[in-house]
Length: 297
Image 1: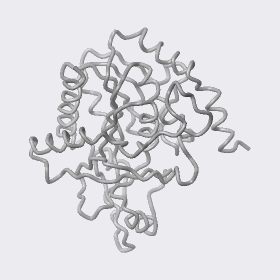
Image 2: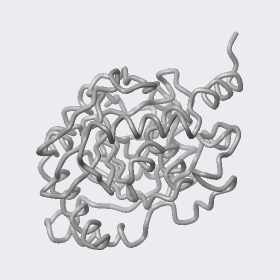
Image 3: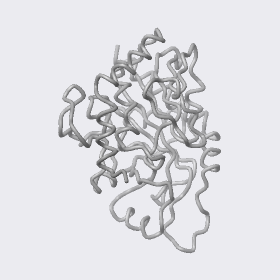
Image 4: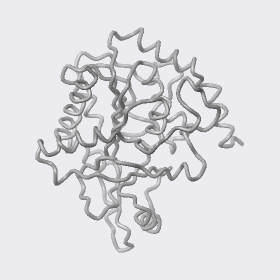
């Protein structure tokens, strides 16, 4: 029987700094692009990657030592291209703990992004809205997270630390860049969606089941605004290796802690809601990328 610690040790042996550098070199040898901005597209938000032009596309199964996404709605490929004339690296489809991957493996591509040369990460996800002010189709800018899986001793940084990536004990007090949060709020006002835009606290649960009423009540009490099954471990890994981070959740269903509420979450509906919000999400990311690029210069 394989234990959690066995999986962590196996991952540490498989994905050393040198192995990850080999993956980065494999990609860099096959594209002339050198992006500074990486984007992770969540469930139903793969439309962002479709907007890239002059692309170099790498299916996950063709990249040495790369895992494969098994979730419907996740295309499973890395794309290098131009978003409104700016070079970006886009991950179309991510990896989840509930697929059987250790958290460190789920967030391993973030370290590849760093080794490719990226300095900024934009992470997107679909999430259930727990804050009663949220509506389906709203966007929550992540100002912080609560690492529930970390409370249980499950971390993407577990195991031996390689100082070439970052320190043993990374600080997480400003995991989400305050300047980029302000920029995103201004973009929302410019787009006329300020009433659909919120700041909030996100949490990641292991899944793949949705939450019970008791679990939702508990999470509302501790200050959670939206619930998902991704992103937190990616951001922790990104901050560990020095990436500047921004993230947002598309609220695709409501988490109502009431036993009489019968509008159950449905994965296919979540994907469709993402497609319906495509124009505004793409515009938000495009303008944010433009701002990051201008400040890099």
